[in-house]
Length: 254
Image (tube, rainbow, N blue to C red; front, side, top):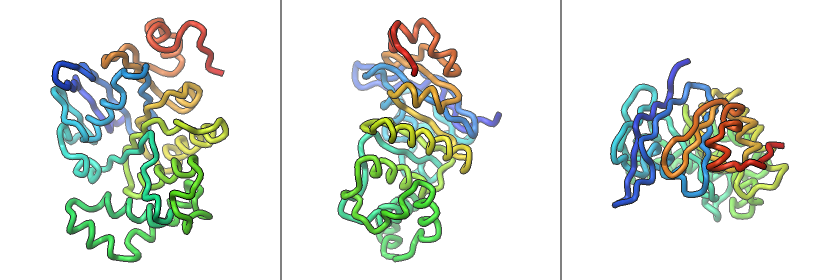
């Protein structure tokens, strides 16, 4: 299969602390790839380096064959990478529709002047917007202030905002965090639809093991910044090093 994301020997240090150490993996186009590990394992730092929020101390990141190592996050986004966050990131006082529109503008702009010029166009991104809203189930909430939406819908809005930049690779940082069981199930369905219906490749960090095991094709496990296992969900959940470092002997995947 064609490789979309290729991470080689990636390391990130903060002073004397090594948060990510010599991590290598690749993600095939059309794959749902999970990253799991204990709190403090370096998962979010790894995400931040890939997305351009931190520069790598060493190693490289290639997206669709292009070296994006150390590039600014906005430049990486224009190459087709988008990201959702563990916490809600919305413009609370603006409508759901305006949030989606602004996400499209931000994703297409590379300087403040371009941003404000595009933001002034009332219909910029309107063609794509209703399709995205329908896909994620927000059509009935387009005129509602984003801050008035239930938490689960705000998380869904975050996914919709990422879709507004038409990514080929979507990084999802704990999409199930704070959701109730039915919302987690719906999140899993939406993640699969993003890949199956839209062809978006997914790189997923998540603590909810039923969701991870249910949607991911392959999973990388890291601990203390280092990879300890890589394989299918079945291979990972039976790996002794993963059980010892993260899951525990009594963990059940029901």
